[in-house]
Length: 376
Image (cartoon, rainbow, N blue to C red; front, top):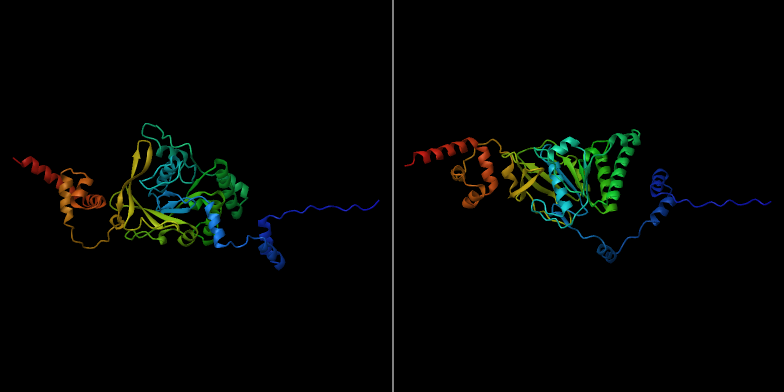
């Protein structure tokens, strides 16, 4: 009886395994083979042809954040990053503009990973004093990750931990058919600090891979280290700025007025390559934190100059003559908008002066009331 030949089926080696083999052994013939299997370089005409079949670039939040972008929004602790993120999420779910800025998309499905608030804190933020809860939007999915289970699955391995985190997010994107992913905040995406160069690069690379694979838009919230309150925001105020900036499509920041606790402003730091810098130091988006019954959100006030909202260095300054006129009109009960139009000055300047010189303002009211009482 003759010996029967065994037939062996060719087994396809996964790309990741191939790359590991190349990086470990680097045999020239294997490397050349892998390179030859890579897509050929396209002509300019072919690239233009491919672009025609790709989705249009739509504005999500005017030029600040656009579709299919990885956007980083940073601010100090307690400024309202999470409040802003939930508010813009709801607007995107509804297909509506936020703070009066253009949203060109229709109803989006948003996955929001909230690593900051507990369930009770979230409920308190989105319900009123009578316990009535905000309905929010059915297209908004907001939750944290089960880090205990993730740690078990990763068996103490940092690389495995990061891999499981991103695998879970990828599963959710596919399962919910999400268009938007919001991550609050970036420090939870890695077992190492994202201020570490290698850790930051790995996180941002994975986010970019996810963005391209699922054709989604991503908003990542980040912190700013302790900064000079006298100076306008720059890219250097972002923790881990160099590497986060290099791998992000666009960046913005939220600042807090030094003169009014409820006032915030949003500033473009890095515009995308398909956008333009509209909301810079001289044209920040000024808004106010408000609770609209059950919904905590930002409300548009005006466009203003960032320097009007910064702390002033303690130096001797001459009093602006407009301040006397502002005091008089405020004491007479005129609203900010009337005073702004009457004197040709910004609403932010009126608010800033009123809060800075509150004692003088109260004295002006008393003087005005006395003048009414004493008049014949």
